[in-house]
Length: 237
Image 1 (cartoon, helix red, strand yellow):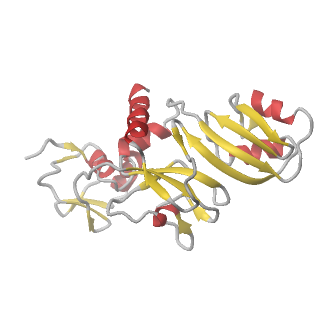
Image 2: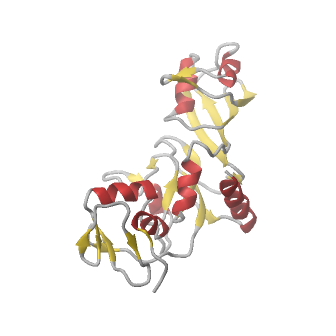
Image 3: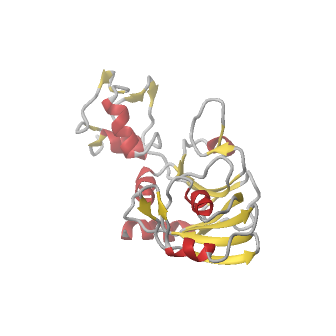
């Protein structure tokens, strides 16, 4: 017999989904334990003896955690499954079921982290975890004078003011920006707010993980030092 764990934690640890998504699946009646539908969030299961299934598909016990850095090409959706679209997980051919941490919109490129570690996924996405995300932005045309400074100081956007950002101009039509938040299409909206247009957007860093010279569509496992630094930062939050 193993140590009982909450059903949503079991699903997260097994790489099926995040813990929050697991709660949604349970409440929707899509999870069975030993053949019986479970809809209560407080139910615990024994990973060694109980049989768990989601939508009729058996869920294996916890797998070895994997941590992957992927250079997302344009045209791919940051999702596990979206009918009619190319999704990032299709680029990583490994036995474990993994899912992306955070999002990059379909037209953007660059660094995406993928994992089957549900706890890491939840903590990285939690608002209390302040990790930097760095991007290189190419503009369709030069921005007006003072526009980058306004973006750095914070702009009213989607009912709130964006947090201060670090910005460095690279050329008339390119700049580097470091954010401590990740609102939906935030950089594109910020640039549009100051009178510009984003022609290309590439994420080059998440926390201590750098894109480096990873080719578009290619991926690698995180180095041990990267993994430990990331996990330490998350546990410290």
